Length: 294
Image (tube, rainbow, N blue to C red; front, side):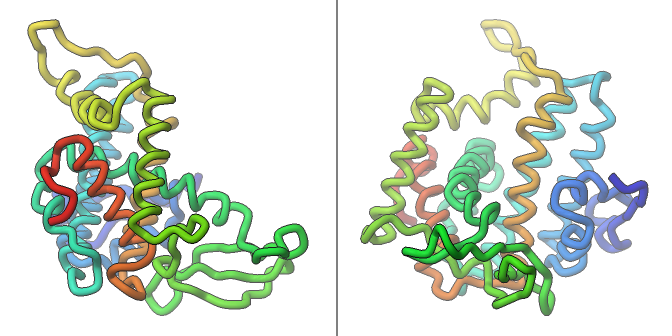
């Protein structure tokens, strides 16, 4: 961890309310990528990122002092990063899949807190590729090409190279799609929803609807009393930050970096389209959206 303290620009300070230490986010994705976001994000997006950072900085100062309020700050930071993604979708609607049905519900905690679990499903699918590199059918045991994120002409690119470090090609991170045998995109989304539902049941003993509700209600239970009393945290804020919130922020920040300046090859194909399809299906399954399509 560096001792260097970076603050966002003056205009963004006004939007976020104060000068901010960017190190907590830099520790998750690297200072150059945080700087890239704060320099190149549209103002509405940058303001959300700044507010998320503000919440996280304040949460860190609450460790061991007021863990419950720190957790509420952490939840708010996650929600701000999700709304930052929504803002990017809105600003680039000509190139992005249809999204108005859920984006217009940006004040709904259930909508915002369902976002990261769906994103984590994609991270699980794609994580092996990013960690171990890519190969080609029939050559898995002989050829593996490492991947690393780089900034190129004010955009995030994935640099694919040889094992000796020589770069072969840079590609748009949105020019990928999850594939399964010969299934089309709709069938792949249904299979991923099935996987998601099974994982939620295995890890939490809940349906998708119960899981989304429980995740959103965690905040309310910390804030408000009910007829049954009030909720208390089972884990320390320190542990929650290490095991949950930091991972969510890292992945959401990478999404923002990938979406800033990039667009998918086709609005109805690729990772963005598949993610929106799965997210919409989860929101429909949770009865947050009444129909599967806008």
